[in-house]
Length: 324
Image (cartoon, rainbow, N blue to C red):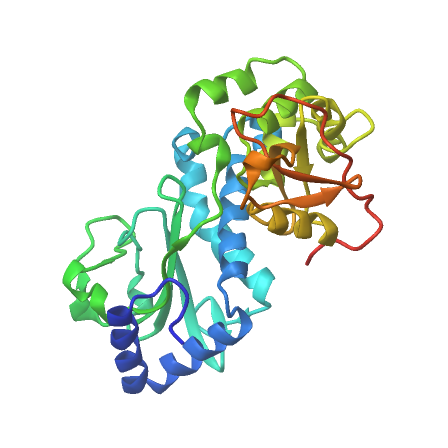
């Protein structure tokens, strides 16, 4: 079985590199074991970008709005947050010690822009890339050799990898899907409508009204609400879920019962901390062969423009644990 989001050609190339370097192979397989799907890596990268944007305080959602010092700090935050998530021990000479091997961690928002310090030559580097505009990320391992590097012109003498030698990177995940920054990628007119409201509750209502059928993460909610009790603004009893029910819109969370509803309706299934909104309509003969779910003793489908608005059914109460 091929690793997630790696083509057959890339996988063959990576396997050859593993055979040549036992330490690289040991680290590679260790990382694949502790995160078989890549979801944990992807979540760390999503959360780190959101941490830098600090939307709850600043209202920012676009990497380009970061200060230069914040962008410079991104690599350090990625290094720290990966170590926290995977409990890597400190390295002897490099950042981490993985499978008894020293590994340096380098992040770049620009693919190929990893800055390699001279002291990393001869060591393994964990090369991390994430691009919020492309919604893609990659993680690979490279045994750094001096002849594979461009000479540095910067003051700290850091080097970059020559383009022709990126084939020496053993990719764990390559061009994998990064959880979407919904605010960045939504229609500009819809985004403007969301932020046109003065209250956090009204902004959240507009967000779930306009960004339907796509996962909306907790950090997006935090950025739009800009309030400490932002999660309360999503729920029923006065939150977006009850405010939009009259328009036929349901807001599915990450509870097990909610995830089952999403599956039955053919919607994206929310991961931990995510929500998916959708307008629904009672099942009718013209909905034949459509995904459907039973709620309030009635069959429902995801509505189309042909379906007139009607109040949405109630979702199951949160009596079970959230999906982990």
